Amino acid sequence: MKKLLQVFTMVAALIFTISTAFAAENEPNDSISQAKELKFENGRAVVNANIANLNDKDFYKITLNRAGKIEVGMTNIEKTQFRVTLINSFNKELEVYETKSAPNQGVETLFFQGLDKGTYYIKVEHFKGDSTNAPYTLRVNYTATDLVEKEDNNDRNKANPILLNTTYAGWADPTSDFYSFKLAANSEVKVNITQSPKTKFEVSLLNANGNPIETWETSYASGTTTIIHTGLPEGTYYLKILTKEGDLNNIPYNFTVNFRADANFETELNNTPSTANEMYLGQFAKGVLSTNHDVDYYRLYINGQTNVDVYMTQLSGTTFKVEIADSLGKVRKDYYTANGNGSVEKIGNLDLVQGFYTIKVSHDQGNNNKVPYTLRLADSYISIEKFKDYEAGAYWVPAFEWGIQNKVIKGDPVTNRLNPNQNITEAQWLAMLLRYALPHEAKDSPNGNWYDTYYQIAVREKIEVSKKPNEPLRRGLVAKMLAKVYTGQNMSEEEAVDWMYKNKITTGTNVSKPQDYLNFNPSGNLTRAQAITFMHRLKREGIEPRLGKY
Image (cartoon, rainbow, N blue to C red):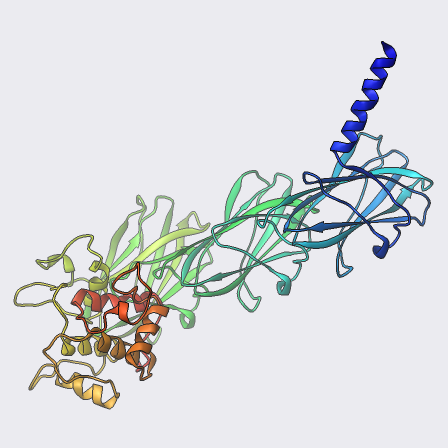
């Protein structure tokens, strides 16, 4: 019976050895060219070997068919410490770690790393202690995934490109991990990262030239925190992550770059009058004050004497200061918010003459860590809600509000209607374009036809018109006129329509069909709502007229 039990034990041991893919070292393997290849079975490769003497080195080769995470483990033995080095195919050392001197308690994890697909090498050599026939077990676990950092990413030129709104895993050291991402439009951006009770991470947001926009450190804590909250314009950006304090080596972290396209959100850097963000009357401008020293500047143009209401977020834990200065830098008025429930409330009113103004938003009292706000300046005498055909929630409401606040479009004073579904005439469209592009001179004619001045400017600026001021306008000519005013170029109808598609100004008349010239319906007519929406979308995309707006 005892012999039978021994046989079963031997068979079981053999089965265990085969199923866990144990391998033996094959000498010579003391150089990269002679490296023993480790084969993964169910994501694991294990080798039993020994270091023969002080100068012995064992090299192993692993091949990853996809990007992924590897976990490298080694046995700790009492009399010998080993050094384990991860090397890429360019013979660059990516990681170097030493085992501990301790009683053999099996294989323990030495380090993790994220790697791109390809060939890598692991070198095992003597570090300290007994160097004669020192036994070891090397274990490599591999999990295929694209959502990990991929070494070597220790400088900006080797940054890992990442997807937005997607969580990635990495392992930080005092050397930096770099990631790159692109924004296709002005966006609100939040960077979330996991914290560690034993480590502080430093996280930096860099612009396309590698210059820092914001740098923050995490706390000794658990859970995930929003480390960066800001607004950024379209472009390429970099994220740099490293360990700053506490445990420094091979510290795991997860991070996400969340974005939401929002043309009304501030774009950094806007902390000086010369870098102020453009805003317009009626706009709900949104931003974040990162610290008590952070300031945000906005630039506003007033087209004629206007009585302006000032609105600002009223928060329960923070008060803000809003300062309005003229083009000479003279402060016209400053306001302070009160504590509130987070709603946007009127905080003041003032008269402004035609010209440029800067609005400075700064912290006053209370919480000063990444505090969001909404700022709005609006003509106190203009509200589209007063028009009889106003429809709350209609798609065209924000565009009409922008157009009326900025004196681009007018309601009918006789009927007190906006007429959003009425076909726009050539004279109306030309007037809308030029009132916005050239507000100093584009005015209704005091004598003759009200539109005469606009047609005179069209001749001077070489804007193609049909000279049928009171007839509905073809959509194809609408596109040509729009492209001319906003680019300065004389395009064909096909080119102008393509320009509108590329700049997200139109989706065509049928979103399920290709975005081409025919889907734009060039021979059809355009409503007033559609016309002002085109201009409002250009404003949201940050595209301004090239005729010389002011």
